[in-house]
Length: 143
Picture 1: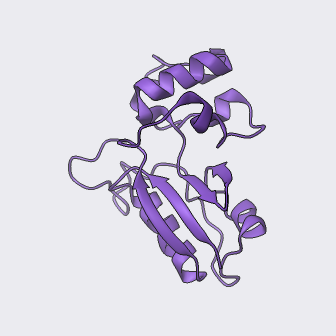
Picture 2: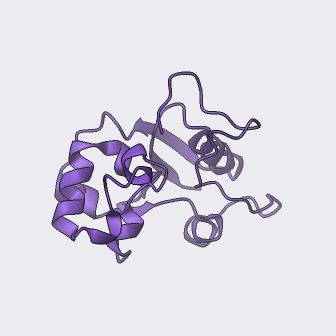
C-alpha cells in the first residue's frame, strides 16, 4: 500500500471522504493543509501534469464562481501566480506518492494509480457539496 501526502482544505467534507476512502483501501494518508503550505510555482506546477490550465482550478472557489477569476482565460504563468496568491483557487486534493504528483480525485484514475477498495461505489468526490443539506461544510469553512 502507498503512503500519500494529501494536501487538503481542512474541514472540507469531500476531502474528509476522500481520505477515508484511501485509508479503507489500506493506504497511509499524511494530511497537509493546502492553504498554509509554502508553495513555489515550480513545485505546484508538478501536480497538474498535462491537464489544461482551466482544470487546475477549483470550480467552487468563490473567485471562480463569481467570475472574478476566469481559468479558461489564463496562461500557465498567470494561473500559478493567482494560485500562489489565493490557494483556495487550487483544485484539490493534491496528492503525492513516491514523488509522483496528481491533482483531483477521480476515483477511477486514483484506483488505477494506487488502488482503491473494489466494492466502494463510485461517486463524485470532487464537486463541492456546500449548500446541500446532507453535506454542509463545517461552520466557518470557506470553499
